[in-house]
Structure formats: C-alpha cells, structure tokens
Length: 258
Figure 1 (cartoon, helix red, strand yellow):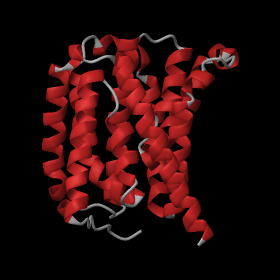
Figure 2 (cartoon, one colour):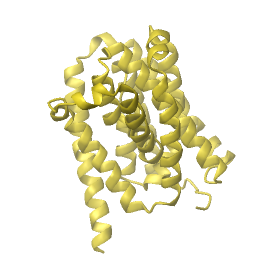
Figure 3 (tube, one colour):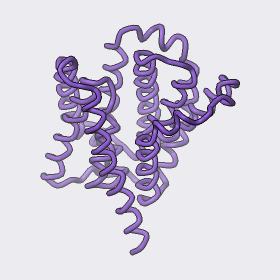
Figure 4 (tube, one colour):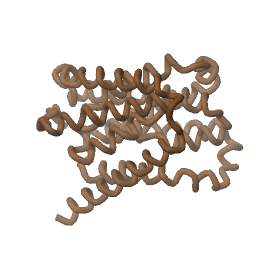
C-alpha cells in the first residue's frame, strides 16, 4: 500500500473538526465515546483509511489523557494487564489487514461491529459460562479479537465489554482498562502504518490541530460531567450509530452492486 494523502475539501475539514470536538466532548463527559463517534461519522463522508489516519493522533491523545486522569487506574490495570499483550498482537494483525484491504470490506466490517455494539444487551443474556471457566483462554481470545478490530477499523468496544462482563469488572475498572486497551491498540496501529510507509510526518503535522480540538473538547466535557444524564447520552449515541451503520453498509453494498 502506498503512502496515503489526507486530501479533504474545506467543508469536509470543517465537518471533521466539528465531529472531533463533539466526540471528545462526549468522551470527557461520560468517560468513553471518542472513537465510537468520530470513526463512523467521519467515515460516512470519506474513505475508511483516510478516516483512520486523521484519527490516529487525536485518538492517542484522548486515550492517554483518559488513562492518566482516571482514579484508581493503577489497581485496575495491575490486575488485568495481561489482555494488553494480546491487544497489541491483534492490533498488529488488524493494521496489516487495514493496509491491504479494499474499501468495501472495511466499511462492512465497521458497520457490522457497530451493530454488534448496539445489540450489546442481547449478548448479556447469553450463557458465557464456558468462557468464564477458562479465564486465561478467554483473555487471549477476546484480546486478539478486540485488537484486530482496533487495528483495522478502530472499533473494539464490543469484545472488550463482553470480556469485562465475564471478569466482573466494575464501571471504573472497565473504563480504565478499556482506555488502556484503546491506547496500546492505537499505538500499535500507528507504528505498523508508519513502518509500512502508509503515514509520514506530513500527515502527522496536518492532524496536529485536530489533537488540540480533541483535548479542548475533552477538557470541557470533563467539567460538564455532572450536568448530563448518561441515559440521554446513550440514546443519542445509539441514534448516531444506527444512522452511521446503515449509511456505511448501504455505501458498501452500493459499491458492490455497481
């Protein structure tokens, strides 16, 4: 795969800045949501690989700040750090897939993962007892799967939430471990793309302003945390994600039909 040029029109760049700010604001307010919002929404008006590239630095910045600022993260990560190893391995495999995959499978993969996330409540009704009896194997499996989706389409929430449910993590521990997994996954993805020659210094420089916007949105969101209802946020997030998944799937199917 040759070096990608991030080439967007002025209206598209404006839309990217708005989406980045909104996603960071939501993440700061509720503790998660940056890639869940920024990746699908931006992917609706540009290609997946460009979306991933312009999200690299902002994602890394938001995840790093979230890991460092959250309370009790040392204890959470100290107990559950082994999954990080398999996130790294899976992210490398996913990033390699991203490099060589065509647009349509990536778009369908992202849409599929969004639908899985939206149907998360149904998965909680499944008997996961078999996995719970084999905690080490479950950590390996869910870590590799989550890492693959992190490296390929930056949407690894569903397998990580299932894993957290199996291990009985509370809300704080889940948020901290997930943010760490996102951080190491994005780092491996960025390193793999850089080594493959897909991303260079020009792309990094071009996305620095997005990092600033993301950090500002995150900081404002953290100040507003007590003023918004998580239930309202979930409804809004689910609405955005259903629209995104539908559009992404329709775009991919339309490309195949043509």
